[in-house]
Image (cartoon, rainbow, N blue to C red; front, top):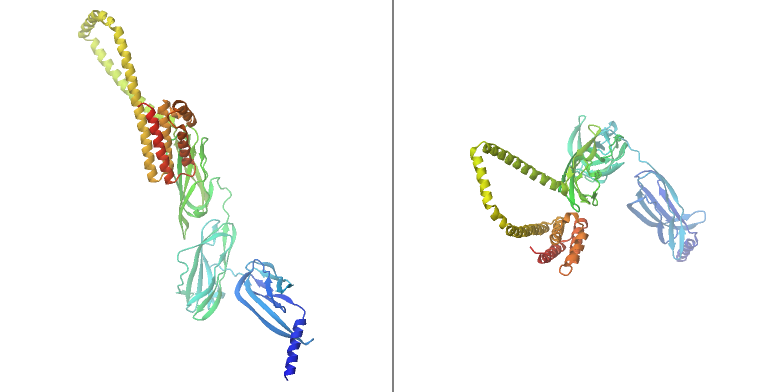
Length: 577
C-alpha cells in the first residue's frame, strides 16, 4: 500500500514538472457600466512573482484574493496545479480598456500572458425633476437630488442636495458616493451638511423618514445641459443594509449674451464698487496707492482683476495686491475683494485719471451693468503753487482796492478844504529852508542805506535757510514715526525728501528742477573734501529700493534713518545757518 502511495505522489510531481507553462488573464464582466465593479484574475501554473499592467483609469478596490488549486486533465490523466491572483476595482469613464499583459517571473525566466479587452458603457442614469417618481414611491427606500433652479445662466450659483427617503427608520448609512455634476469648476459645501438626522415626512399621505445630506453649491462654467449623476450609499437598519442609487437630475445652463462690454470681469450676480486714492498732490518719483473695492454676491470668487487705463507719465508697479473676504451662502459667494494698485509717478505735472469701468451680468435683469467710478485728478507741483499764489493775489488785490477807495475819498475832501492850501504853501517854504542841508548829507545817507540793505538781505537769507532746515527736520521726524508705525515705504520717501532739501540748501538752488544725479555731482564739486557724496548716493538708492523694490526690514529701515541723520548733520556743519 505504501509503495502505491509513493508511486502516485511521484507521478503527480513528475507531471507537474513536465507541464507546459501557462499564464492567463481574465476580466469579469467583459461588458460593464461606468462605476460597476469588475474583477481581474491571473491564472498560471508557474509559481513566481506576478506583475500586471492595469489601465490608468482602473481604480483598485479592497478585495484581493490569491491561492492555489489543482485540476486533472482527463484526456491525459495529468494533474495540473494552478496559482491564481484576483483584484477587484472600477472604471468610471466609458470606453474600451485593455488589461495585461501579466508577467510571471520564476528564477531567471519571465513568462508573459495574453491581454484582455473590456468595454465600459456610460452608466444608465434615470433623471427626475427633483421630485419623487411613481416607481420610487413603490420602493422601501430611494434617493433623489434636489436642485434650486431648473434653468440658470453660466456662472450663476446652483444649490444641490442629496435626499434619502425610507419607509423604515434608518440607523446610519455606509459607502456614500457623492453626486457628480459635470461642467462645474468646483463644489462648495454649505453649512453643516453632513449631519445625519432622520425626520418624519408625509408624502402623498404616506409616512417616510427623510435625510438631507451633502448640500452643496456649484457654479456651472459652460452652457448646455448640466447633468448631475446619482449618489450611492448603503442604507442601514441595524445590521441590515440596502443599496441605494438615487435618480439623477439635469439643469439647463444658458449662455451669457454676446454683447459683453470690454470691461466685463466675469461677474454674474450683483456688484458695487468704491475707490480711494492715498494722495492727490504728487510730484515725480511719488508712489500713489489706489484701492478699489468690489462688494457683491454671485460668483465674485471667480472674477477677473479690473484693468486700469493710465495716462502717460504714470505706470502700474507690479500686479495689484488682492485681499479677498467672502463666504459661500445659499445666494452664492458673498463678500468683498479689495485691489491695491501701486501707481508710480514718472514725470512732473498733473494727471487726469480716466474713469474706472467694471461690468457685470445681472441674471435677474438679464443684462450687463457697467459701473463707472471717477478717479479724479492728481495735481502736480505747478498746480499746487498756482493755487496758493492765486489765493494770495486775490486777497492783496482786494486790500489794494479798499485802500485806493479810501485814499480817493480823503483826497477829494482835502481839496475842498482851505486848510489844505495853507499847508501846501507851508511845506514849500520848509522845503526851501532845509534843501541845502539835505543835499550836504546826501552821500553819507546813501552809504548808510547801502549797508542797511546788505544787512537786511543777509538777515532774510538766514531766516529762509532756518525755515528750510526746519522742513528737513520735520521730514526726518516724520520718517521715524512712519517706521515705528510699520510704513517703511512712506518713511523712505520722507528721508529722500530730507536729503534732497538738504542739498538744495547747501547749493542754494531749487531742487524741484534738478535730477538727483545732478545734485550729487554739484555737492561733490562744492563739498568734496568735507561731505561724503558717496553716502548721499547710497542713501538715495536705498530710499528708491524701499519705495519701488521689495522694501526693507525693520533693521534696515532704522539703519537708513540713522545714515540720513548723520549725512544731514554733516551738511549742516558746512553750511552757515
